[in-house]
Image 1 (cartoon, rainbow, N blue to C red):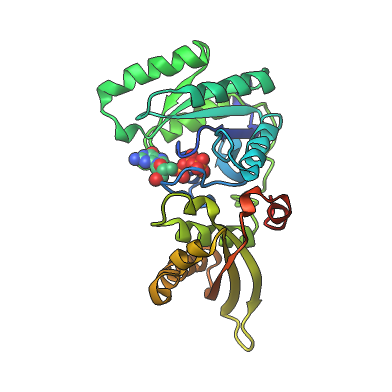
Image 2 (cartoon, rainbow, N blue to C red; image 1 turned 60 degrees about the vertical axis):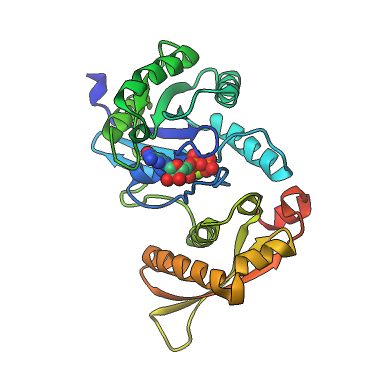
Length: 301
Ligand SMILES: Nc1nc2c(ncn2[C@@H]2O[C@H](COP(=O)(O)OP(=O)(O)OP(=O)(O)O)[C@@H](O)[C@H]2O)c(=O)[nH]1
Ligand SMILES: [Mg+2]
C-alpha cells in the first residue's frame, strides 16, 4: 500500500501574532527551539524544527505572526512569511480556540490561497485548553466555513500536549513520499548564537509592556572560552532598544532588572549548551531601528 511509504517534507505554521505557533513548534519538536511570549510579534525569523516518526520526517517551519505592518521591520517579516509559502508542502493555519475568527485571519487565508493555491492546507485550532468543550464545536464550524469543507481541522493544546499526535499524523499524511531530509538527532538548524540571542530577548521581554517588546533586539558580540578553563564560556551580548527612556526601563533601578534578565537568560543558555557561561549584558540605543533600513540590516533583517 502507498501509505506504507516513508514521507518527508516541510510544514509551515502561519497565523496572526500570539496564536501559539512557536509554543506548538516547541511541543512537537520536544525541545525549545523558538522563544515564546504573551506579547504579540515575538518571532522574527523562520525557525526550522524536525519531528521524526517511524514513517515520516516533518520539518516544521515556525514563522512570524502576520499582521498589518506599521514599521519596515513588520513589512520585512510579512515578506519573509510569504516567501516561505512557496517552499513548503503543507501550510498549517493556526487559529486560537478562544478568539473569534476575524478580518486578520481572513486576510491571511486569502493570502495563502492567492500565493500558494496548490499547497495543501490544514486548519489548527490552538489553545483548546482555554475554552470549554461546548465552545469548541461552534469554533470548529466557523473555521470550517472559512477554510472550506475539504480542509482537515485539528484542535490542539500545546501546553496540555492534547491531540498533538493526531496533528502530526494529519500533517505527515499530506507530505510527499521521500527520504528523511535531516540526519537523525538533529532537531533544528538554528545556530547556537541565534538561539542565545533569542533566549536573552525572551528574558528581556518578560514583564515589559506597550511598545517596548517590539523595540528590543539582541546581538551576540562575542563567545569565547575562558582562558585556562574548558568548562566556562564568556558570552558578550548587547540588548538594543529604540530610545534612552527604554534603556532606563530595561536596566531598572540600580541595574536590578538587567541582572534578573541576565540570570534567567544565563540558565537557559547553560541548558542549551550544556556548559557554564558568564553572560555579560549591555544595553544600547539604536534610535528607531525598526524603521531604519540601515540599522535593520545590521541587526540581521
Ligand atoms: N493556554 C494555552 N496557552 C498557549 C498555548 N499555546 C500558546 N499559548 C500561549 O500563547 C502565547 C503566545 O504563544 P506563542 O507561541 O509565542 O505565539 P506565536 O504565534 O508564536 O506568536 P508570534 O511569534 O508573536 O507570532 C504565550 O503566552 C503562550 O504561552 C496553549 O496551547 N494553551
Ligand atoms: Mg512565535
